[in-house]
Amino acid sequence: AQTVTQSQPEMSVQEAETVTLSCTYDTSESDYYLFWYKQPPSRQMILVIRQEAYKQQNATENRFSVNFQKAAKSFSLKISDSQLGDAAMYFCAYRSINNNDMRFGAGTRLTVKP
Amino acid sequence: ETGVTQSPTHLIKTRGQQVTLRCSSQSGHNTVSWYQQALGQGPQFIFQYYREEENGRGNFPPRFSGLQFPNYSSELNVNALELDDSALYLCASSFVTGPLQETQYFGPGTRLLVL
Image 1 (cartoon, rainbow over the protein chains, first blue to last red):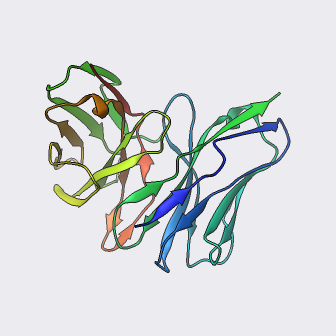
Image 2 (image 1 turned 45 degrees about the vertical axis):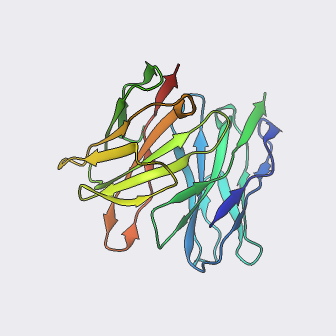
């Protein structure tokens, strides 16, 4: 079964600085999807970025980018120019193309210091 | 805002009772997935509904059941509530066509407390 591991329960970053959140996963599949979701205190899970495993190019969405290392099964999220509104729980998630079960990591709580 | 809505926002029940949670999908989406998120943990997949039928299930007992309606809204029913069922219940909608499933968009969740 696929598992997702986020080894950093908490991270903090100074406003305007850059922070990287780590995620590793375990799978025997060759094609799948990876996601980063943000969950602010309001609870609503918001999609940050999505990566298809067959794409070698790392996904980017404005200040958010990923470092996808397929061989190492690593999928880190880099947040540039951090803003106070980036403070939230961040979840890494894996979804197989063969089923509908999305697996989440335990999350990383990001604090942004003014 | 994702366009996915859930009701109620909060709910308190006692052990042994039954509960129904509701989810309205984002416009254009035909699939609803339900997740349980215990405090301090990531969401866990309960099941998914597509074309009004269950289309995948996680490791949850049969007392967790669901429905999807022709308008693609959905219900999650939990019978014989246990204390461990206390959690945030999230629904997520997406568009599925053939083997392709688009990104899931989540609702704000229903916080269930079982006493």
